[in-house]
Length: 527
Image (cartoon, rainbow, N blue to C red; front, side, top):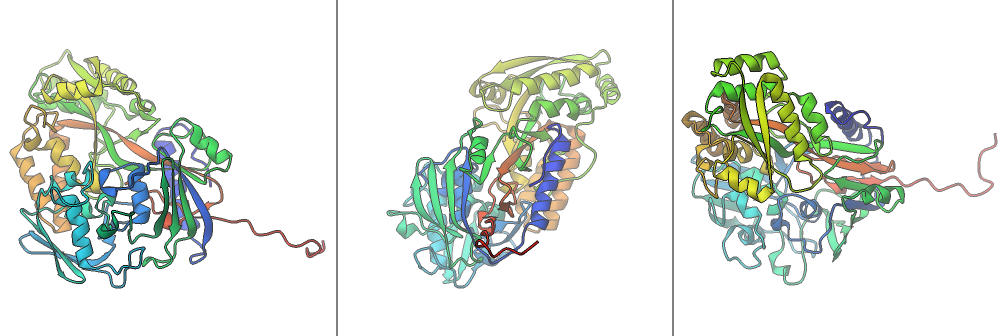
């Protein structure tokens, strides 16, 4: 499978991504042939399989194999492509989206997919108090509640679905690609889960889910006849399962101990530093810019190596709209000192750093110490305040901090779900609903982000988000620090595994290469 060796820094990521590319280009052979059983280890496996109850993690991974969505993410990015819908359009006012369904798609029980099935499935997630509503309803967050921005979902005819909105909402196609919005056969929910995806549900129990290939799948016959998900944990047992040949692939959120057979891809979850812009010294823009200038990726890298790598832009790789420009983290001490002087702190300054330490594989204290060391070089003395995650969040929402370390996710791979909550005035009111922990307000930036969330023309959205990131680099209300990676460890016989930034790979294209049977005795060639 290759090797992802070397220190766990950007070089290691490059090696892993290179291996992923090799798999993509060099191992996608033998299309049409079917392998046997593919066994996949996940950090946990639940018997509850409602795709709308989680926005990430094992439930989404399994849902991606059983169900389809109207549109779906492309292989290596958050761009979308046809799924159950072959084409879609939006009205000039941005209030009505129309989706034309693929012909001849059937649910696993043989039921022909119609527009009404799609309506029933989406209403289950979007409408309040709908029959078979998911608990908890994680999916509703992506449409701003239930019903949120959605006014009505209707079947125009047997193959046409329309979604009417209360206000223009450009992220809608990306939202509908999320596994939380999987199309399920609601009439079967009293008995079992039925979808249209490449695998059918055969068995679901705590710690083990078994799926069998759907021979009539519209996307083609899956490469493996059976897909078995098993609970591999996060305690090192996962790699032991590979060694014992009890699993073929193990997905994990932390860096494996081994170096061979490892794949990694940047995900959509980032860590960032919120700078309280209403408090000294960060009420001065040049003091905020000095923080970014002083931060050194070489110091951040070892602190986050168990979960990710330094992030040098406001959006991670694999998210459309990302601006490729000068790195946000500059490791430029001289520039940082100059900016501090221009901000009115020629002899340096001090600031507190709030963190929530609650266990897990990321040592936030170590990240905070890396920030502390980098800023000390520029003349900023940092005192670290450690609280429980809940207490840290409450303090930050009340503005009881100068700097705070948090994480956020680019939900559905759309820039709106990161840049808007972290940067707009809407989330900058102190209290229990605060999302913008820098409490930064800028009417021009607000206008850019609101416009980008409403206009449906992708090139225009791209342009607006590029401008927004330029403004963020100039104002620096928050500083990106790292991006979490999705990891996989695979046996050498596994073919065509492609990780996805969402964390939900498509296993219908993956198989285990079976060794050729040995020739009968006496039939070998003579030397």
